[in-house]
Image (cartoon, rainbow, N blue to C red):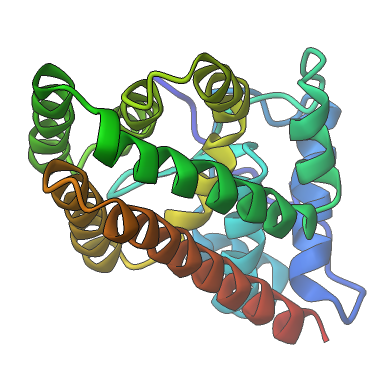
Length: 248
């Protein structure tokens, strides 16, 4: 059973105008010096807000950032748990760039639009009946496990990769395989969306993409996947904006 860290005085009083930034730094520091370890449950928003004398909104922003960076996992109805140590093995350079220079995530999205837009367009022309059935199988499984984030992520990756494979272009397949290690960063951002909106809307996006590919409408398939990525981009920008307002 994971232990719960609730000791008084674990966190220090906030002495900066950038409140959520300071909370985040303290979380990173506590993980770095070993006071918080993988599997530990951290105090609730209410407990932390009370101990630090700040708003729950500031705590929420800090926890969202910690989740985005892969430090904690927020489990619905259970709380927030330390996911990994800051002393991690070396990561792929692209992952490091995106994590350390957060604005680079938008550049990565631009590349995804180009590559995945082309893949969807090509798959609409080249996909075999068996490949189309495989996409639909994955899509149906996604609808059944939407409440289980980890399974959703795995199936989402599988679906995007199945589109790349249906292009029958070896280079495109290898590019997508190289990029998908960084997709987890996007899943962390989308978790900040309201649960009902995240699951219903994102599933419908994928359904429309596969429908266009099935109908061999290449232009529509390309546009649908770009629309999906534009939607994700707008959500990330809103999260960024909320964080900037809070930190002023």
